[in-house]
Image 1 (cartoon, rainbow, N blue to C red):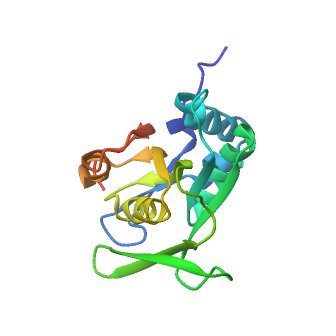
Image 2 (image 1 turned 45 degrees about the vertical axis):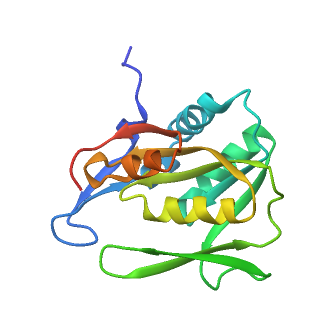
Amino acid sequence: MSPSRTVQDYIRTIPDFPHEGIMFRDVTTLFLDPRGLRLAIDQLLAPYVGQQIDKIAGLEARGFILGGAVAHQLSRGFIPIRKKGKLPGATIEQSYTLEYAEATVEIHDDCLQPGEKVLLVDDLLATGGTAEAGIKLIEQLGAEVIGCAFVVDLPDLGGRKKLEAMGQDVHTLTAFEGD
């Protein structure tokens, strides 16, 4: 009998993508395998079962896949946190700094009510900039982020520390050292 696979076993590493020296952690191989995907979804939501959660928010784009599945499992609504200009209704926006540029994400201005509890989901936590922007958007609407769940943590890039310094509970399934 073969040993049980972990979430990390389903993730492939692609060297030098998108730039030389980067070790890209590709979760699409996790998504391809039904056992791997089920394992990841079950482990992402496990710490939050029994907690009050009103909505699941997912960061573009792989957070849509994971967040949508978590929302389905918990029978909750899903909020897409999108790149600027992609949502059709009235939005609020939050800019954040990338390695060499700035980016902006948005949510619909009517997707949350004050006091609602939100779980933020994405595939990877690196510097934490996108997650921080998502948290700020949720909080602007008067809702509360009760946790941030990621498949992969890149601890050397400091995202976990950034989110924890904001008072956030951070749950990750696996970690890879380096970039």
